[in-house]
Length: 533
Image 1 (tube, rainbow, N blue to C red):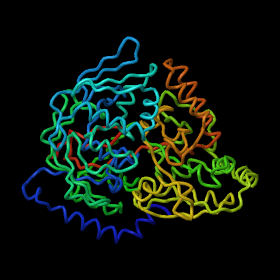
Image 2 (spheres, rainbow, N blue to C red; image 1 turned 180 degrees about the vertical axis):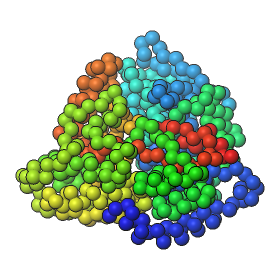
Image 3 (cartoon, rainbow, N blue to C red; image 1 turned 90 degrees about the horizontal axis):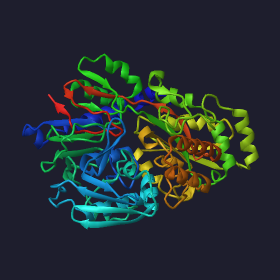
Image 4 (cartoon, helix red, strand yellow; image 1 turned 135 degrees about the horizontal axis):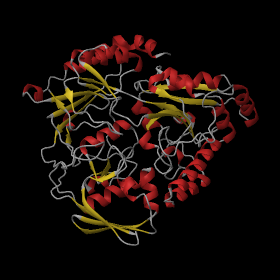
């Protein structure tokens, strides 16, 4: 179903829901004449723990209430954030970090080394770069309340890159009592030390999130750049209201009922550009990448020949044309580390510009596939990817696969994709997602590359000892030319074993009212430095 047809089906319902939500925004804060920034996120927030999931909604929420030890600027250089200073020993085995003075959590407790160490330990269980960093780690040591050390087993060149990782999962720092929560469970409270405080009493999961300015936050003195520098809050309150119908969202923005629409539908951009009070801003300059991810634990996708057949049945242009539509905003590209990064290569890429349906049918027949049902999970409320499953279904039916598309909201999909249950107990075969290029720039940060299986792997649980050795080789290597050669070998192996299928690169602009100044380009969507005039 095309986006316009889908909107016609839901516009009446969406209009009623959206206007109802907006009418409910007349809160006590507004009555008190506080400055309120109103924001339409790309989906509703349900999972409030940014370590539990890689979902960008949870990551963006994390940047509102948490802070990080390091961050990256617009040149992707790592800069201190919560850290005041650090030293590296001559043998490069010991890193000593000192925290900035006066940092407090939202409950008034000081930020300490114990909080940091516990937070990083939890992050290191789930995150791709964190897992690799901890595999090189001998111990974390608390020197005093503001000083701590990382002691390595052997030199590792990506320590600061890991601690300053800008996107999912971000190594956010939380109180130790929260960080002691098992990494597979949501933290019991939303307390950080970041520029905003979470207003729990007004939280409506999947519908509305409210934040207030943190009066105790002390920004850095440097100008803001990407996720680094001074996080200066210039509004009193931020309200996220989820409006799933694009037409309703556009009308709300035009009327001034909301200030920023994070991800406007691409085919509404021409209309938005005509509005004198609205600007289209590219706030994610590194771009995004679509992905089809398969479940290696679920028969018949545990068979590499079946996965290879699916790979040959697909071409990127079909997905990009259906989901984005305007070639000005997308690019066909088989580079798994991003189309504009130093590790870009087309080596090993299959089915980028043209599918081979005849070969795919032959490969499927030779694989032993017996017509088993293939379940594709399809999000109904995430306009940035909701067309992708609807493209995959007919392409895979065309080569003889028995496809069932199961629709659900995005946060339900995020929860379900973590399950390894059989199909008759809620299991799944395929889901589609999108990643920022910052999440995919090398073999360590790209979660889809991991070959760790059920213990530490990304959803889909690819298990591949060959690719894990290559990732270790990359982590140890410091020569850029040799790193690129290793990354190329990783890409060839990924296409051979079909860890995932790249579906192309796109650039998602945001729609912003012109009275909103100071929006920051960033690998994540951040809402500090913003003025509302």
